Image (cartoon, rainbow, N blue to C red; front, side, top):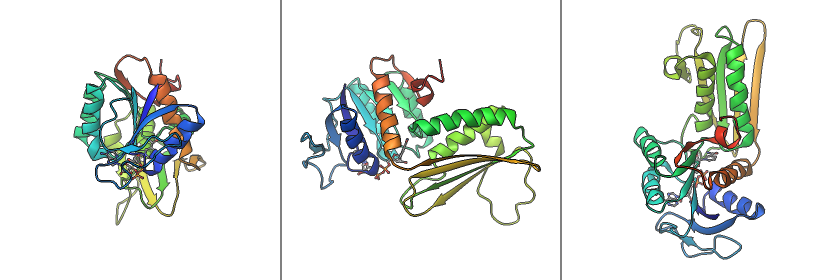
Length: 257
Ligand SMILES: NC(=O)c1ccc[n+]([C@@H]2O[C@H](COP(=O)([O-])OP(=O)(O)OC[C@H]3O[C@@H](n4cnc5c(N)ncnc54)[C@H](O)[C@@H]3O)[C@@H](O)[C@H]2O)c1
């Protein structure tokens, strides 16, 4: 597999390059935004340099960039028949529609969080939500570093979806994002979602089920971005040779037949 890392000078891009090396995967191209001062400079120990043009020489691309460039990236990957691992979060409706369109033509794995631990957490939350009914008040709290641009995190939204699915309700009808002022008593069945920002926190997520008599809390803490990078690289390996389609980490981990 010939891999291209998009946004290779970013926090995740650098980690993907390091982890690909550790996993013995071949990185043939690393891109950065046009105009970046890293263009032309070495990106990997093997001497692959940053480029701003589309990496046509790759057969798989990994995208952890910024949501506004995702539509263009997808069009290029479809043109070059490349498999696509998409980790970029904060996608608009139009960008999500472009993901769905592209996945009809290329194998595409999209996950708001590629860590194996978080994907197990999603499974556990879905199961917990089907056992602990709406008399258990469900709240999700996430914390990330101060540089994160979108809120709540894609993972928190994924956890909220898993919770809603476990309870058999539509998330939009029960979600509340933060609370302020005289909001009144908490309605039964509400799912609260709260985003904290500060310091260098890589990514903490807690899902809480609070009843009058007991409280269940399930927490995941990412200590290093390597957790996301290794999961994304595992997804790229898994996608190789697959039919076009929209896949996620449930497929990669075998939770979904
Ligand atoms: N799915 C996951 O597991 C997961 C985990 C961590 C971060 N993320 C998401 O990944 C994205 C990147 O996160 P980060 O912390 O590395 O951000 P970052 O800002 O450190 O890195 C993004 C990089 O992409 C580059 N870039 C922007 N537009 C580009 C373009 N058109 N072509 C090439 N490069 C371009 C930027 O210059 C930057 O270097 C964010 O959306 C973040 O929320 C997802």
